[in-house]
Image 1 (cartoon, rainbow, N blue to C red):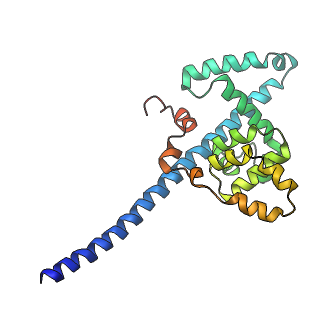
Image 2 (image 1 turned 60 degrees about the vertical axis):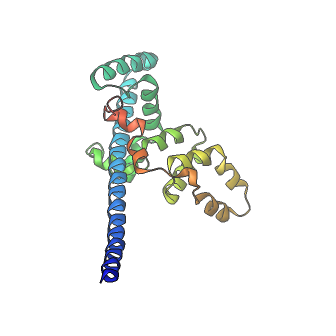
Image 3 (image 1 turned 180 degrees about the vertical axis):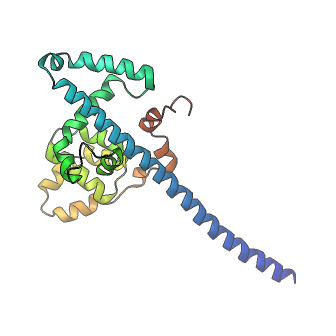
Length: 217
């Protein structure tokens, strides 16, 4: 009788462990999805801010001439009203981000919805996290930048993997390789240090700043 009870507890324990594992996976997936959703909206917002800055500067020669002064004033006002995350260097990135993905290009991918496109429509155009686009903007070669963006999307690269591939000149090495398919397959393989936990995705400093939670967190 005691043996039967022990066996029943063991079976129930195994069933419980399996159920617990599924629930933990569900929570991890939900946290990642939440982080991706916030990141997508944040990225779309930053693209739109970049658009407003560029269009304001283009409305007159005098405005273009004091562009940096404009960013300083805008950074001060936004920081006062919205908190951290709107420093001059971040506003410069937003301006560069819009320049790298101008309205005409976004028009083409949104079936010419702009300017009627919602922020969710624009967010769908930027599936990578903002941290990834910040890293991509540091790549001055446009072809290389597009290559890394395409491969990051195709291979599901984390920002760490993207950073590692850029630092290792993966684009240049692939271009010189006689077996490009093999290089691309090898490059898509993630290393252990490339992995990002759901908690790390949520604690992304850019996300926390955007939500006004960095200090509170």
